[in-house]
Length: 158
Image (cartoon, rainbow, N blue to C red; front, side):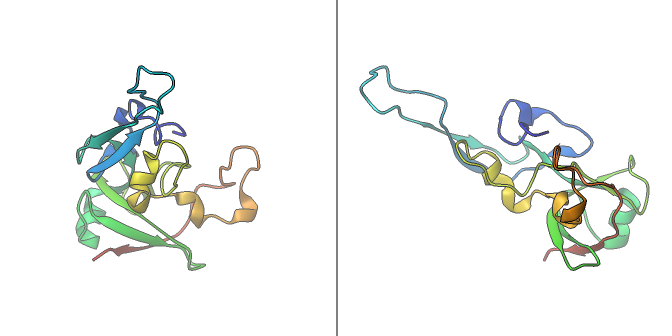
């Protein structure tokens, strides 16, 4: 998932926790050189991504829980842990997740990058679940939490 948020061709990949729920955005592709003259600064191409064309990290939630919380696919919710830390992300309702469980990807989301700003364009509404874990319980090698279960409160964004 590390490169999915910075590489448009990989962002077409859908998984159970990566869905095409992006808002429309524009970004610059720093890898496309539009100048044949090597003495001229290359022109960078601006690219427009239409809504629903990029797979972003989502919060996969059981459809019955969606009814209970009055949320729909594409809504933005906030998850808050008992320590008061919170993250927000877009919802994807599914029958593939057990009721009472929220599933998401580790690592991507909520992050801004240098260079190609593809992931920066979706940072405001993609979840970075690592923010809810105890920072003293993350692997120094992978950044993954030492455990995968955490209790959260669900709040729908207005």
